[in-house]
Image 1 (cartoon, rainbow, N blue to C red):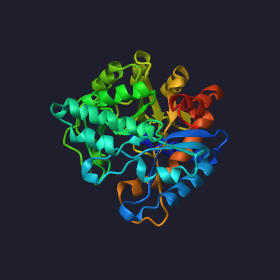
Image 2 (image 1 turned 30 degrees about the vertical axis):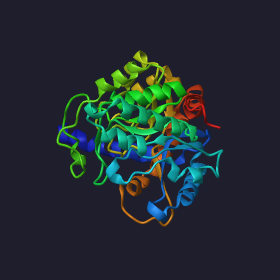
Image 3 (image 1 turned 180 degrees about the vertical axis):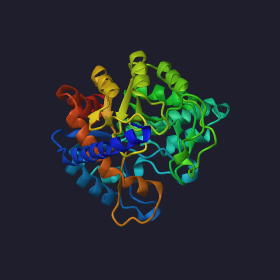
Image 4 (image 1 turned 45 degrees about the horizontal axis):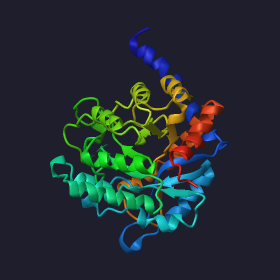
Length: 357
């Protein structure tokens, strides 16, 4: 049989497998309630915010998909975005203390971090001010810091490209503060093994022509203060290709302070190193999740948008993926061994974010 003939014969099987996979995901039931350690609220800006409405939408989807508690954090923003941080939404969360907690710094600290992307401008006074602001965030009730960005690739126009090495002086300051207060840092760092152009599907976004390598600086951050717990965000949905289970496993073997939050995506999502393949947990991921079962949490990266909010910004676009991701997450959890599922759904998050109620 020719190569084309083999492909033609294989296509119906692939279609059936894909169709069956989607059916399995759709049928998965929320038998285990889980902590979602990474979500965002979109409530608007200025005087027209409706975070109470965004919280209502969040609770509806949390109840539908079995989310026990969600940790809300601001996306990693830069100064030119008119950034917002936890004070914008914390009042709305406090009306539901058993369902939400919050992390802070993705607005104020992250904007300051990228303002000083050139480390030569980081004076002792800048470090002291950064540390003082970080302390205030935890005093205000945050359970950790996030979402902080090392490399943040631009996915769509208006979604900022951000880059500082993971061991930037201000991230080292934050690591010291986090270690002293025993709270984690949620770190967005797209994994790039060597300098390379962005994937073609991001051609219309706001990225440079070459992405910098990031893996070595993450190793340096982990080694800098081993008491600082780093939660590397978005495991299982890698936009570049270097966030492999093999690399994560080596890092976890070397650095007991590394954790990963898992963002489970469906079979059609254009991501690398996905957790699910043909209706099963991919074999390398399964081995890693069992071997380091105490080091993973769920972080769906869902965007919950206030009803009636108009616009077409990145958060509005990302919110369209909530339901497929949450369905895929439920299905993924149903495939884990019971003891591993218990750790990843709840136990690890309650230990890691030890200020959760």
